[in-house]
Amino acid sequence: MLITGASTGIDAQTAIELSPDTLIFVHYNRSKSDAQKVAEKVNTSGGKAALVQADLMTEEGCDLLYKKVSEQTDSLDILVNNAGGLIKRAAVDNLQWDSMIEIFFLNTFLTMLLTKLCIPLLKKANNPVIINITSLAIRNGAPTATIYGAAKGAIDSFTRGAARELAPKIRVNAIAPGVIETPFHDKFTSKERLKLYKDNTPLKCFGTSDQIAKTIRFIIENEFMTGETIDVNGGLFMH
Ligand SMILES: NC(=O)c1ccc[n+]([C@@H]2O[C@H](COP(=O)([O-])OP(=O)(O)OC[C@H]3O[C@@H](n4cnc5c(N)ncnc54)[C@H](OP(=O)(O)O)[C@@H]3O)[C@@H](O)[C@H]2O)c1
Image (cartoon, rainbow, N blue to C red; front, side, top):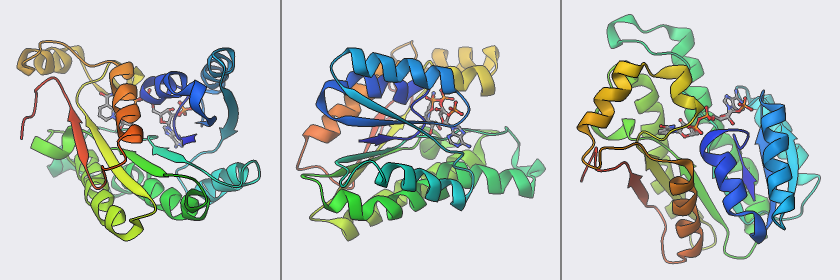
């Protein structure tokens, strides 16, 4: 199992939640000590963790991550494309070319590239599955995060296309989290904006990383599900 961005937040918890099941490649970029703590928790709960570092903002970085993983395993049962981030908030009338490129690389191209790179390893596993982490921002418009929403929206569409192309061997699904309490919001969301989200959420709370980890487990275990995006958002967006 390879989990990108498993040093903090949603997928740090996912690695710990799923640890007894499989060898877990805990990927990180800058948060080395956080990633080491995750790996320790995986190992002490009976699992086996391997730390892999790579900056995934370039094609070379994605190639390097794949190289490090393929040197240590012949097959991959699960790929969780989770690494991502907002990079920078900006209104549509104030967009900058460079940040648009960065947002699309971190939230779109790296998921597409890693998916492509890992296909041969995934094909060698039993019941392999890819899980892409998108966002509530794909659903209803997210002012000042419009490019981020568009970048994640591309992955929503990619999920269905890849699900059709890679069936019947590899399943591909996505999760669109609402507001989840992680370091993401320390970096990107003001207290006022967070209060607005909570007030507008029918369940009147934010989500937690372990709720997303449980949704990842559900996708892994449901062998009849592919091409699906699951919304986990406290009712902030309903279909
Ligand atoms: N939290 C939310 O409310 C929320 C809602 C919807 C969707 N999401 C999505 O959920 C995913 C996880 O977010 P989170 O909430 O867990 O946030 P987080 O705690 O900020 O985690 C982001 C992860 O992405 C990694 N990352 C960032 N830039 C990278 C780069 N250049 N190369 C490689 N890895 C990089 C980070 O690694 P290092 O720290 O090691 O550098 C970290 O492990 C993201 O895709 C995010 O867009 C989050």
